[in-house]
Length: 237
Image 1: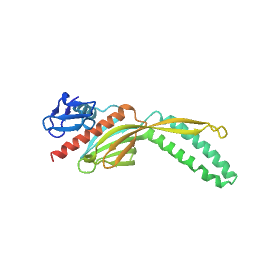
Image 2: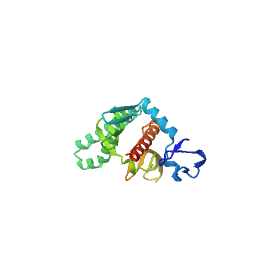
Image 3: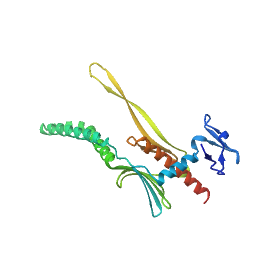
Image 4: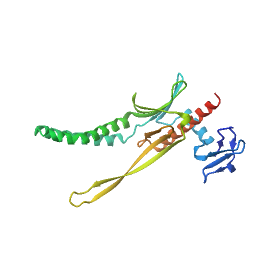
């Protein structure tokens, strides 16, 4: 582990790093830091190498005052989600045709939640087939993290000086469903969701369920790299 002090840029020696207590001390300027908030210099160099030679599914483009790191969200699981979307759409379409034939229009309202689920399935299908996550670093404009398809999606603007922590977070949710109306039996399934958390003035929360571990780790490291780079630039302005 090779860590530089963010204040005086002197290397913090290993004997001044306490992993168990999550602290490190710079003896040159007597500053105390949380180890979890520090950047490992070796990790920085590794990230720089990856940005120069990005792996498959990741591209780096420099264009007139901006740098764009694109992580493809394409996944083979798009085929599975597509099958679910087709089956669900066909089933709801069949039920809707029967309802309309019987002119039982009141039942249409009860189908609305299922229409929402089908819409979400189709959105997920297209994202897995054509989606991307982009980190856009600008010289003059605010930097932002984009998630979407093509130009359609959401921009999350990043206020680097306010960022306290960047991490990948896994959240597990118990989903309980009824197994029978008369027996009262229930089953519980555990749903796991993965997010990138960028903690600053406001929490930026990016779902990354379909990114593999290599891509999600690279995204976290790239975000930490630019955070450090931006803060160092601010110091010398």
